[in-house]
Length: 198
Image 1 (cartoon, helix red, strand yellow):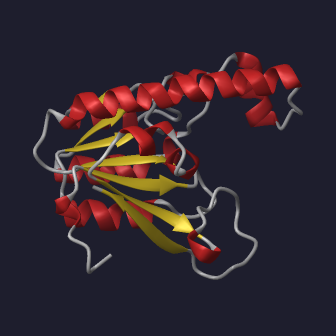
Image 2 (image 1 turned 120 degrees about the vertical axis):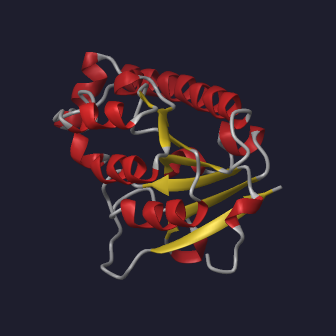
């Protein structure tokens, strides 16, 4: 990362594992290099934190929603509060999931074919929302925008990767630069890889 000038890109995507590894360490490293005005985050769902007061209020809660516990984003919020960086969620509350679909994820219920089809429909709606909010916010700052998203959303054939340009994607990877999208089978330190689109 040291040889890269991250300020050359309008968008800096950082892939998240949602808990497989300590995602915050890499996020903090890049936030401190870039010092952005704005961070867009999947985990923050539909929230907008534009002030220290709003961040303090959120930090008093236990959960952001049924799907995200505060502890998953607490370090990010504290860092942004310290550095006066705004945070904007780019997703739906509870990621747009119905009560049944939330139960499948949280309780490990075996999904039916119908459930899987519903997950796929929601995933497409979510990707369109991500794209819309990213495009809206590109016009609001001259500094690079850091976008925190699950690594699955950053695969080469995703809507974001195809529609957007002038970005760098920094993601946890395994052999041959493959994106890490499930818990690693080894205990070696996780590497980060990157890809660029002008």
